[in-house]
Length: 444
Ligand code: 5AD
Ligand code: SF4
Image (tube, rainbow, N blue to C red; front, side, top):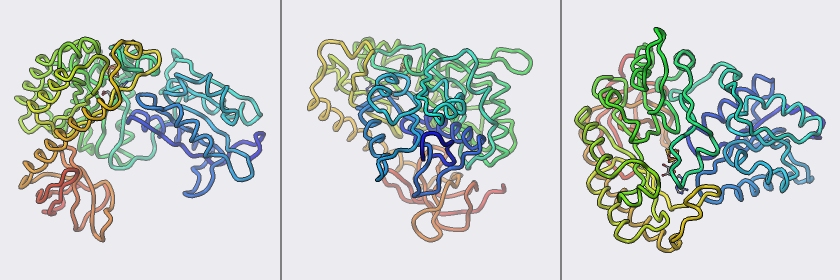
């Protein structure tokens, strides 16, 4: 395609967190509304959006290598837009270093893509990393298509400023989307096929709003209302901060049947000095007390978390405290990462950065403990009868894949369809998935 032509086909490649996946889907819907079609599998697209993540690792280098790979044999490139958090953080450098990039658009500005594409099609190079007062959500097209599971961003941004984290800089301050918009979007997702909705936010449990009667509500109030949508079977939310775990939200886990028994509550480290240096504003003890209350409200709850090993200054003994916390909690599943200095964050310039080899060793030990606990949790589920939401076909004939209420990947063989909620008995546990026996298909 020559730069003076408007694109006819697009491809959006999203990296990173679920919110980026959500943003990528919304961009795709926006492009489709402009009459641009998704590029068929295996074919070049006229327009490629690289929806990037900046949370860890050498994210920017990855973007440059992706851009290089988009060059075609004849030396031409598609119209390339770099979106997401790397665009927000390093937009200027990208424009300077990669001439084939025609658009740089931040996570709060992508509703302006159609104008940007018009400008870029005329040969201009355009950057928009504003965080405008008008919200992108008002400008985006309404939801029309959904698989059985859908994401719904309810809250964005972060005011917590953990010292390692780039999110407050790339996504901006904490903003909650209005209640009425969320109810509307959720209903549309359900009408278009969603049976499970995962509410997303960098600090999703900090969501606040007003209900239709003008009463102040928190995330638990929103979940309660969403639970009233008849064809919506399951509600999840992620990711939460311990300090925003309100009494009401904890109680909701025991009261709302559609709220799945799963809580992702990152702690990051198991030592109070490290937590303080991370500016986490909770302690190991206050975190454990929250989990105790959640377990009292919902005894079968599956717990999940995030960990960082090798934060600047973390001693061997402090790392051992993290292993101690893991032992104390017994997580169902977790994410764990080596600390990665992010440009512009306070921790990046702290003394005592930890050598890579030490981080490697710590991560291996932590992951061994987490894998042990994940398998133990899966084994403890055997014999349970539960519903599985069928998400897709498996590799073998007649096999289906879905999730248990505790977010375990479950596979079974039998009569089913994508979107069904089926009753199964969990029969065999591996570290990453569970085999099940189909009992009966629950009425739709
Ligand atoms: N280095 C390593 N891990 C990080 N995370 C956030 N910032 C960093 C960083 N600089 C992890 C945290 C967070 C998850 C989304 O990513 O564990 O909870
Ligand atoms: Fe990052 Fe989460 Fe901390 Fe916000 S609360 S700064 S997103 S780790």
